[in-house]
Length: 409
Image 1 (cartoon, rainbow, N blue to C red):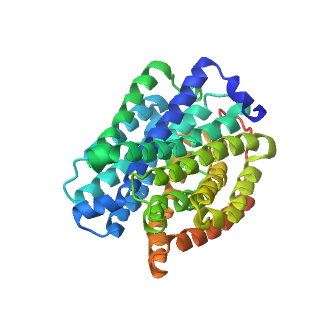
Image 2 (spheres, rainbow, N blue to C red; image 1 turned 45 degrees about the horizontal axis):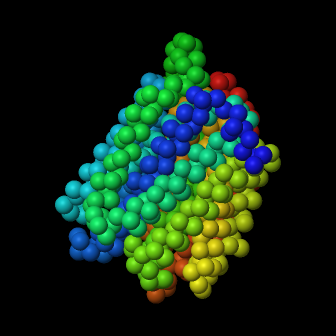
Image 3 (cartoon, one colour; image 1 turned 180 degrees about the horizontal axis):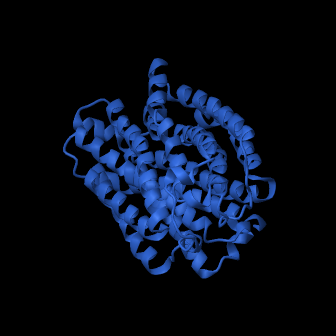
């Protein structure tokens, strides 16, 4: 496929760096989504309402800006590579600890801590990759990196389908410690960002506030943009399995439920790769706007298909558009960010958007309960509104496709 041709031109070191960043985000998402498949089961074990377990998703998303700021600043100061390894170890350990939660309160605390570690991965991985590749490859690599998220969702669905009946929900979180092994690969195959290394010879390193001087308006805009993006993504994913159980009456671990989620994530992979690469030709904003607006006519098929075949087609197409828009985000945010805070700003803006959007699952659940438990109604109208908001914010915003990332700005 010609749109993905730049990926074939990467040298061995660049490919290892991109792969490590892709796997980091994939395994981070894998650990996050495991909980979304066992919400009902966990609620039954702790004898609480599902709403109280869904609150764990809110806490995880709320904690991510803290992690993005903490690990991002460390990455700007000490390098992308060592802090990425530290971050991967931490989110894996908190995932493992979740398996041993003895109460809902303990589970909520652990998911908050997991959110802190999760918040650091995306920004560091994306900056490491973007600073290590040619400018013409950013669109394709951006789509590939962001496709790690639906790949993680798919792996979580696969693990739930194959294992939950044998090892229970706690066993799933033990499996969730596997991402720690990624550190061995990063240590052996991935070098430090040459852009970051070059910046170390420039003398005094300014603090965050000094580095951000003149860029606060951009930062606020990026946070609002990422709020809409996260409402778009989480609004289509976090309660999808709950929709399967409550509205379609498909039990967790069933083949039909797994197939729908698999189609959803296959669509996300296709969309991320296609629109990420397309943005290199038609521009970042235009590619994202097209994907966001095309999601709207797909919504009726996605939620009201009427048969498993049509619902599967809808699940595939909705994520082609949702993750198609998302596939452009890593390159778009890194190109807009000043070099001195590139380890911090993209990830922090992303995770602040997550914080602002953290009410998504709770709000959708509330809306569904107000309409007789109709998750299809709640998720459909949420997605229409957010798609329009996202397109508007993109239309109003800037673009810096192809800018030199080493330039101090």
